[in-house]
Length: 549
Image (cartoon, rainbow, N blue to C red; front, side, top):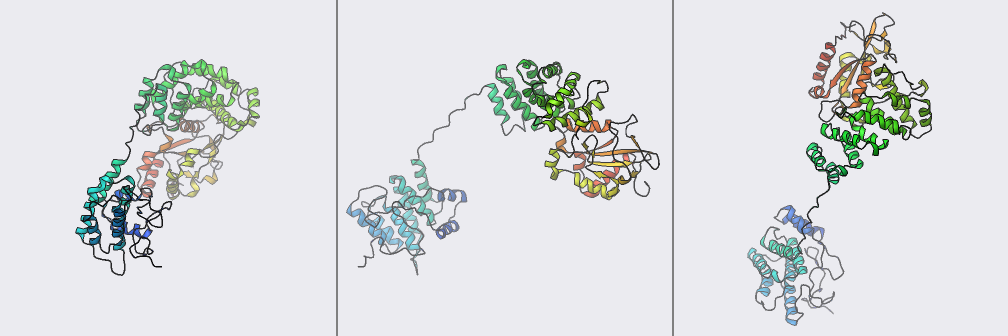
């Protein structure tokens, strides 16, 4: 038996229809083609349109007796005239007729009828073969009807009308969508204001300042204020360790903050273990900063004497920081070079790193402490200090000037007259090394011994070997790249590890030619860089090419 034409569900939706309905329990969403039409036809900002389309899926309005049940959406009594008007709207053949049924029956129109009218309008606009003409005034009148009555809609009806209006192409900034959106926002429960932030104690405020995203731009304003407002009992070892690690990690050479750490270390000396002290002392060596606190060194010497046998790795770490500051205490050196200490660390998991640090300390004693007469690290225990470029250089190799400097030297001198990344005894990696005769001629490296003897002989700096052929003294010139990350963040002071390497290479007899990053960054292209290197080498009296031998 054929169903009457006007009943809901009497036919399957045409492929061209823009709006579909789903029953209770069924998910509903517009088809991809409908969404595409909306995106192409909506004359509104993408932000507002996106906001509407991203509303959570809802059940559209399905009224009266049908295959999904007879639950009327949007509220209102379930009476005969109401159902009759619904059927009239569903059977309307033109948009004008649709508007006429709504306008001529004001006492029978309920809120739930407006989604039905919008749905039928979508079906008419997508009908084939020839959709009925839709006059602009008809759409405006329908919009005005919905706008005048939307205050009586419940939340479900507002949502359905919003979806259908957008899918039908009503402008997202037009009066219909704006009125429905305003009603939707009005029905939302008010948001509770966030509770006011509770004032933090000074120590916690300092921890919060360390995690502030603007800290790197204005470190002094954040931390100095927090330190000034903190009570002495709030500055715990944990807080001060966080501060020390932050300064060291970000290369922040802030004298006031470093002095605060030094003062804390002196005041809390009795309560601090060497494992905490090694973290507090770390930024001083890394940032090449010797504090003005007069009790800083005596305090550290007492801590080392008390804790040296308890935590060997922490003891050596403290001495490494003091080595960068050229403040090695003889008493602590006697202890770490003693056979008992060396035998004790040999069987530990960190034996290799401790031996490397002890080798560096032994080098510092050899080069910088001529008055030291205590025990030394046995030759069989010594290992290369830094057998390869440092981790920071390897991590930032793509930002380094090393490749372009190497190309400039190759074109300027030739590949046979320099060595790159050569590790010289006792284990320092050089950027570029040249061998130079007594008259300044750059010599092929393969014909010379590029290494100076270690320990160094007693001879003038830069003249520690003789050319086997001519018996002329041969100098070793080391070109040192000073990249931006080799300095503290202020860009004026070399980091402690860099200053230590250059200092030791100079004391071993190598002539150093620094290449600061400011000068390298100012060279525009390889021709300018070659000219820059030429002037640098000539200023040292070096010659090459046919006139240089």
